[in-house]
Length: 589
Image (cartoon, rainbow, N blue to C red; front, side, top):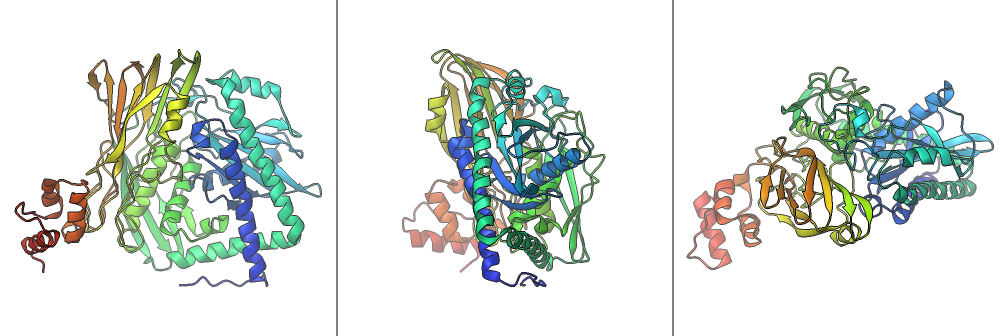
């Protein structure tokens, strides 16, 4: 149904142009950040985001379309916290050209590797808004290269934690703050490229936003921002209107916390009342010892990104969040407090939270909710010394997996993670920058969950260390429980990790989580990422679609018979004959 609003902005054309203009400002910041960054995880994988936030409370005004969805909420909360700390004197007041740096998870953040910059945008000596961005740094110090300490029990083991401080003062980088950062991270000499790229993105944002204000006027743009927020709230309420009043239950599971080898339960009740949705996680597992705790900002943002997946056409604005209320899950692992470790929160737990939302709403929104996607970023870090280049390195890789099937079609194969648009960096780039060889990078056949619309397939890859020695660490998930199928669909295949050292296979006790595994030249790590869950009864899948999957090598004949009830006759060579015979055996026409 269309959203109905009482418009106070009488020129819809200008409103639409300003909305696109704000979006374009953020998009250009995103592109600048990626193009200027040094690290492949930003320059190639696009693990970053840029946005515009309100001056009074940090509410989201606009975010780049190519930014990570999980940062939609966290950057809003981080900016809000910065504003509050400035107001009560806990943080130095801003001046034009200042850029604050912060990565503290407990101040509206994610994990320590996601480093946020924020700068005030002034109009006539008053702050009109804040520009902010987040970039995933490949290392932030801590116990292991890359920051993903699989069995950390305190945040200090995960790396350097920065409260909001001015890294740039009136446009000039503070050498003392920079030296403190460099003294606490690995390959510090390479971080200046990412820092300057992150600052350059904000500089481009200032220029483009000023041009927009010059063209339409400050008050017109201010009025448009208010109107866009109101309309976004109305649109979200219109989208959730078909959901029946009452309580809708969903669950998802984290394999383990990396320390205690027991599953963590995300137990969610979504209640629809008075036109809004209330998300209650209070029955989830208590805080855990390992790094799979989630800070409150990430938990809230995960709910927002899940609803964005379900209703992608609702504009990215704080207004879209207004009908979505997350009950504070205090006392659970979804509201981590200092000093709980949190390296897995944004990359892994956030995706389980989204999966729980999908699970809760699948029955009441079957035409729009998908089965669970792969739901892991496949965080793999390798750090060591390259004797050929005579320098240290830290390689960080994230990996795609299968999307869940839906009411209209099969799930996407090798899609990005639930939390963003980040993709695996090109293997050619990784092999040039780091002393590794990709022995294999292929489709993981058979990994998609069976269904009337099957899940997409994950990735099967193998990375070999070519020279020197290194330490491998990974924080992944879905190694114990595959991505959930819905409405009768089967779960997708689980994540798998095998480390081969001197020809002997090693499987981590926690399946997809381990750290500090010493490897040498010739050793390799094999990973199979999960496939998406299936949608609907597999025995209702079209015969022609099953036969096509077999011909493409996605499933064997035996798997097709077991999963989809399709029995092939080896004596038939004609495609039409095969399909006709298979339909008869299934009881169809």
